Structure formats: structure tokens, C-alpha cells
View 1 (cartoon, rainbow, N blue to C red):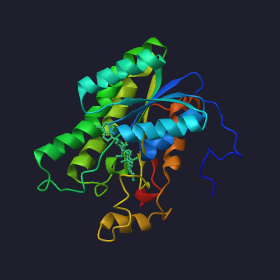
View 2 (tube, rainbow, N blue to C red):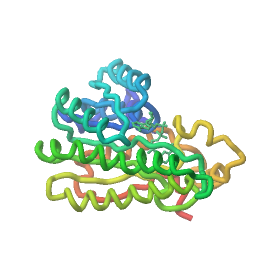
View 3 (cartoon, rainbow, N blue to C red):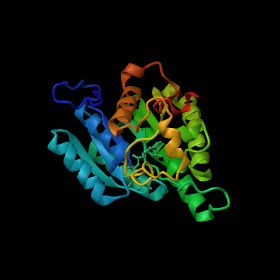
View 4 (cartoon, rainbow, N blue to C red):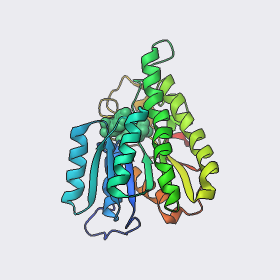
Length: 264
Ligand code: NAD
């Protein structure tokens, strides 16, 4: 199975040459794979993450492969932090033409009674409010530069129950509404906004979950048509399509990439 466009026998397309791309949560998993792929196709990548060591690792990986990347420490749930990162990014790399709103956290499948206020607020802050804060901080420069593309990472939990707990599922449903409203509001500025809804992907987030036989989600996953977890690059490939000119007529879409989990 060939799932990677970074295979050396597969010369890179150059869909993002001359473009600055901000990737939130680029220190790990889907964000890191996407940051690598954007750089591989010519983008200068702003690696945004709350974890300083993972920022350095991603930047080093991209540079070692000959790509361009700089790291910016940020907590996307915090407005001041986001505004500072946006200012620093634009000052160093110029206007941002691509945003991947990817950073997210899990709620350990907590139901409403097991969810306290701090957990609810944290999940909403990172998984939903953070997308708005990041987009809000970067959009003016994107619009001024002539437009661009925003891709938001949702989840199968944006469509069905059981992909997370109550806060996670609620936040991810919110990502779909956010994506559609943003697509409507900014299309006339040359900004396309779309989302990707992954199924189970092998990342830092799911490392402990995907082999835990006590979780119903693990059994549901095996019954999905693909019958396996995805590798992060398989999501990155969908992200790059939506962020590229190849998706020039795609507005407000939510692309499922879930191995068929939700088709039955
Ligand atoms: P991951 O844990 O491997 O990576 C997430 C990254 O986000 C980490 O580097 C983390 O440090 C960063 N981050 C967390 N909070 C942050 C904050 N406040 N500010 C800045 N950065 C922050 O996770 P992943 O699996 O790659 O998840 C990426 C996205 O994909 C998330 O939105 C997640 O909900 C979604 N998703 C993942 C799966 C899956 O199976 N892995 C499935 C569906 C959706």
C-alpha cells in the first residue's frame, strides 16, 4: 500500500511554493504529518504548538528534509497567546495563505456527569474556540494578501456519538457549523474554508486508546470497512488537497476520512 507522497520515488508536486502555512498542533500526529507534507510541497511552515519540545522536533524534521519551517509557541485556547503568535508569524514569514486548525485534545470519553466545568471549558477552548481565535488573528493578513484556504480538523465525533465524550462530541459538531459559517462569510474575500473528519488515526492522542479492548470504540473500529487505523499522512493528504487549488470549487465541505466507519 502506498500511502505516502513523501516516498522518494514519488517526486513532490509543488502546490504551496511561496506560501506560508500555519499548522496548529504541528508537534504531533496529523498536524506534524501535514506540516511535513506542506513543506515538502514548497510551503514555509509555521509550526504552532503548546509543547515546546515537539515544536523543535517538527522544525528539525522539516529542515533536515530540506524544507522551510519556524516554530511558534502558542496556547490556541488563549486569545493573547494566539495574537502574539500571529503577530510573530506574520512579522517573520509574511502573510499566511493557509491555516490548518488541527490542535485538539480528548476528554477521555467522559459523559455529562463525569465532566466537570474545567474539563468542559478546556475541551471547548482548545477544540472549538481555538479555531475561531486562530482564524480571527490570521484572516486579516490572508484577506489583504488576496485570500487563501483554511482547513479545520473535525472528527467522526462531528456526526455520531461514541467517538468521544460529551464535551468532545459537542465541540466537534461545533467545528462543522464553524466551518460552514466561515465558508459563507469569507468566500467573497477569496478564502475557502473546509474541514476533514478523521476516523481512528495512530497518533499521540490515540496511543493508549486504540489497543484498549475495554473500549467499545475499539470494536466499532475493527468493523469499519477499512478494518484498520489510519496513518497520519493519510489525513495529511486530504488536508493538502483541500488547502490546494485543486479544491478550488470546494467550500464549506466536511470530508470524511474514516475508513468507512460511519457509512453503516
Ligand atoms: P496529537 O495529540 O498527536 O497532536 C495534537 C497536538 O496538538 C499536540 O502536539 C499538542 O501538543 C497540540 N496541542 C494540544 N493543545 C494545544 C493548545 N492548546 N495549543 C496548541 N497546541 C496544542 O493528536 P492528533 O491525533 O494528531 O489530533 C489532531 C486533531 O485530529 C485533533 O483536532 C483531534 O481531535 C483530531 N482527530 C484525531 C483522531 C485520531 O484518531 N487521532 C480522530 C479524529 C479527530
